[in-house]
Length: 225
Ligand SMILES: N[C@@H](CCC(=O)N[C@@H](CS)C(=O)NCC(=O)O)C(=O)O
Image 1 (cartoon, rainbow, N blue to C red):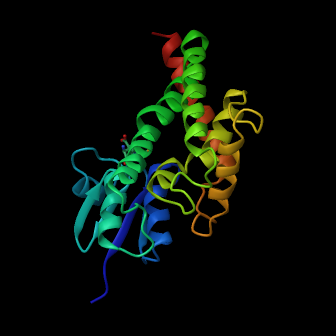
Image 2: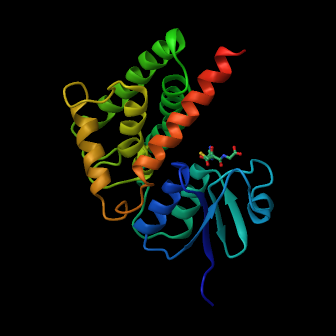
Image 3: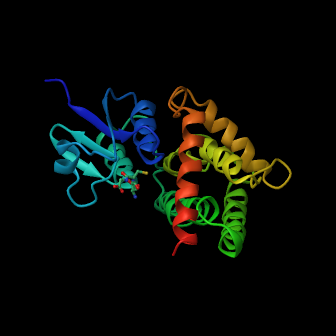
């Protein structure tokens, strides 16, 4: 019997892209269900009743939520093209950087740089630059966070290769440049060039429009507090 593999995503979110990339990289066939997050489908609510978020992976009727948890599930279920090294220490390291992506890099960039202004934004910029410096140091001398091949940390951080440039444009500042972050810039290019990444990014102009609207709504809300 054919396997059922479905990915619930939204058009703009970077998190489902991790799941899509992992499945493509491993050559697993899947269907995509694109959710309107302002009008979530009964199926999404059924499959992710706790968080009600995308991504959700549905594999033969079983739902798995949280993108980093889904990546681990994919890795254990489809063994080809491994995302994690054998060595326990290196494995722990890859998981550390994947978590760092969500806990620090995404947090500081989206919530503090994109959606704030003034002092809060300045602090967000400093925090973002520090986080990027950590990534730069980790990457130095390596092609990918996973070494010679793309691994779990690369998929987790892959959103940077596209979204950071749009965040920068919307906010009107440059965070990542060749001079300060040569390894990171090279990694962003290598990652974006990977065959499984091609054609996966959301429309750039539409994303920029969405982030401008989010920023305006966030600042508007704050000034009327
Ligand atoms: N930590 C989650 C984050 C997922 C997430 O924040 N998804 C957002 C889209 S960017 C969502 O579905 N939001 C819907 C909502 O909050 O109602 C993951 O990695 O899967």
